[in-house]
Length: 69
Image (cartoon, rainbow, N blue to C red; front, side, top):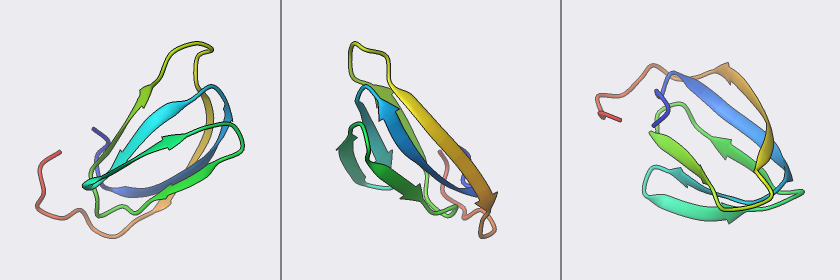
């Protein structure tokens, strides 16, 4: 799980992955973009070949909440 200190966003370059932000899980594929606000816990799991390649970025987020990742 990612620590909820920064907003995370990115684009999937190749492959596929399952991205969970808070309680919501979505399948992300080539060309898809994503955004995870800093106050939510999140995780990602690559979903088979070819390996998932994501171009991520972070920006300062809201102060962490009391949720445990």
